[in-house]
Length: 292
Image 1 (cartoon, rainbow, N blue to C red):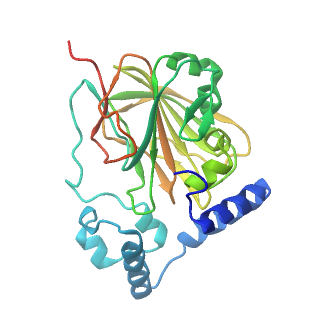
Image 2 (spheres, rainbow, N blue to C red; image 1 turned 30 degrees about the vertical axis):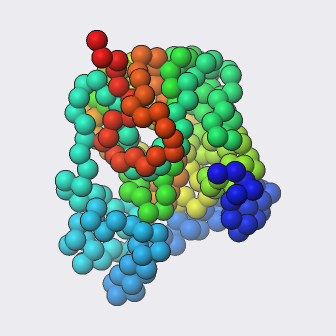
């Protein structure tokens, strides 16, 4: 979707937020996060959450029916809800790298050079900028970068795309701009300037980076295997020694309000789907080793 095709309200909102100073968007996002964590009276909470589900088309079959019946203590608890047991199937083939989350697969692009701009439907950034690590980016030359957008209706937990050792988590300070089509059209380098959490994994497919990109309204992001203070003011690199051992499908992070995930891989994997955009679900094959 081009910027001209985006609804006028989205274009106006993107322009206002883009023109605002960094601290203003951060303060508003923190305030939204704090409001989402405020305790709700049970009856009011159930009414508000069911209205949200109807408006955004949340699939109630993915949610534990008892949790819906009992209600959620606050909106953040609903937004970060776990899936109902059995709601997703994780492809267990050793040949595959799976989608780490639900969402819309917007692009899969080949990485030609770490210092060369990746251009994907209006988004422009280098892998070095995205990872905030030019040396690590060199590993991924010849590989792929897959971008998955999470809609407000989606499940907002992020999982390991394959068996992995988590060696490093990097928290990258930045802006909290929207990730709508209108916002990307206005600021094509959005994914390289927004706040990010970068997970660096050693896997049987080589090194893989899973980048969680924050957006306007994101209260904060949490890492599921390390504890951090949200909204860093400076670049924070956390080495994991010993590394965290993760099985394919294990939870690695949570968006407290939504955003985008980018999966960056080394060469040697083939695309499962060539057409984009398409909806994807956690656990379905995204990339795979070539058959021999």
